[in-house]
Image (cartoon, rainbow, N blue to C red; front, top):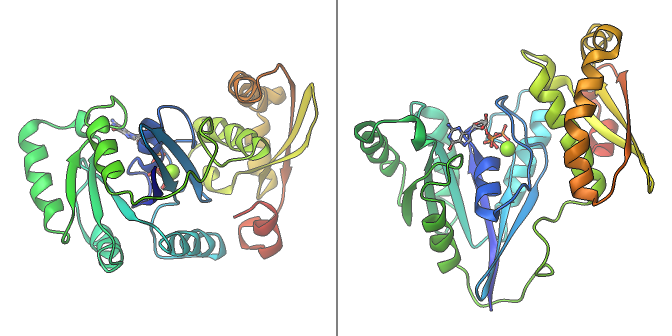
Length: 286
Ligand SMILES: Nc1nc2c(ncn2[C@@H]2O[C@H](COP(=O)(O)OP(=O)(O)OP(=O)(O)O)[C@@H](O)[C@H]2O)c(=O)[nH]1
Ligand SMILES: [Mg+2]
């Protein structure tokens, strides 16, 4: 048996979580087109033939701006301890620049193999992909470089094999039927947040957090936190239309996770400045 942990690093929004889901063959982490979707470390587990690969999905690598982003970056920094390798994800549609070099400085200094995934190749012509591969290759002394599309699955199998080959002998860290280390309550909260992110824009997605208050056999009660009353009005929507839509979108996925039908009750609450509130961040597990 071979096993080990691989940290997934990269700028916000490059597709780290989408790629973790693709590598795991199912949904582990929520995904959105807004940066800073991932807020805590989530492990996705690949149980392969003779190996267990644990992919540690992380928040995007960034320079901290406030207490929330400071916590996010701390999570990233801590995750680099005790990993067998780093999967460094780049978005091939974006210019590979200062942000990526800032991350490169850190990950290539870790003394573990760095595998680069150049993601979102479905959006680019082959000529452009080749150019981006050359730029990516100049970032540091990488172990391997894989052009992939987390969305279409292109190149994902090869990347999985590459990462599995890096694992040393070791025990299974999780039962073979588990796909993630996320507890059901957090999975539920994350699914609600994912749907709230889908329906909001601008600054609002960053102000949203979700906490499951109560989860019993037939019902789930969760709170959607925002920071101001005007944000609350938006998330509630006219006559409750937006919060209802969030529930409608989240419920089927929640039921699939829990394996039973539930009544989902969502409430929206304004909690001023929760992103700067140490106690609140801790309560949310951030
Ligand atoms: N076209 C295309 N879009 C992709 C691909 N992979 C991810 N995306 C999109 O990119 C956006 C960001 O994806 P995420 O997986 O949430 O990105 P992330 O790096 O985890 O983002 P943070 O958690 O915020 O750091 C979403 O809209 C995805 O659908 C891909 O291979 N091709
Ligand atoms: Mg993510």
